[in-house]
Length: 291
Ligand code: C2E
Ligand code: MG
Ligand code: MG
Ligand code: MG
Image 1 (spheres, rainbow, N blue to C red):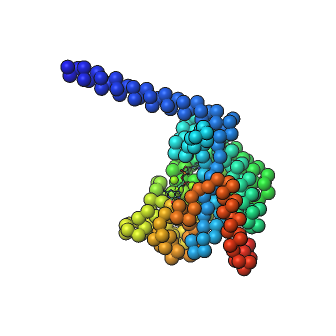
Image 2: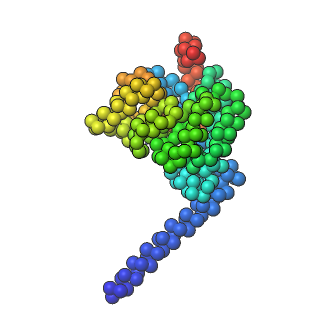
């Protein structure tokens, strides 16, 4: 009797494993053909000046239109794309679309808009990344300094040599480098000393408890102070509540990103948002923004 029970457990276990495997194979198969089918697109989340609400730039975030009714977020497929060696090609598509969007947004607003793009470790290992970025930016004719490439601390650990070489070249070309999810990886301070960096993004996990948890408050304040000392730009990610917003307005140089201001949006909605902002701004504010 106990044997039987054990057997049925095993067979149940196997079935669910089999299901997972099938699902994964299906995901793999579809992901492999997604590029050819043009199923990747970007959504854009505004980065704002918290005092005025003025949009300074956007972070481009990847989405996969897997079918008419399914849109997958990066957590569902980026890792797999890396394992299947598809990330370079997908990444090139991301860079191309982000450059075009930067141009479109700049035209709407009549001044240069900043555009941030995420890079994965695997992309940085590939020397061709430099050319992909350079060619796309030269193609749209925007100053390279309008583009920021976000990497995580883990990226540096995974591909130290090649990564820092590529980053140096990119930076000499004129683009900006940001450390995403700052404080959640390894040896942040050591990396800061070694690598060409222009910006830190305070991870959402620290912003979450910025009013309730003394440790989070301390960490957030310390990252802001560190950025100031090193003359780096600092972005607070994941601002969701009015009180978190209130906290960051105490630091006039901090740029903010989060659902409290705007959710990531598709291209046409981003254009509409920028048009609205332009109409609302006084001529004096507009002149100041152009400076
Ligand atoms: P990330 O670069 O740290 O991007 C921020 C993530 O936080 C985005 O999730 C965004 O939608 C989400 N977010 C923004 N504001 C809030 C908020 O107020 N509350 C909460 N709960 N979440 C907020 P998303 O789009 O799902 O992207 C997840 C991660 O996937 C990104 O984290 C980034 O590491 C990666 N990723 C996104 N696009 C790309 C890409 O084009 N290439 C690569 N290699 N990675 C990408
Ligand atoms: Mg990012
Ligand atoms: Mg982040
Ligand atoms: Mg993240």
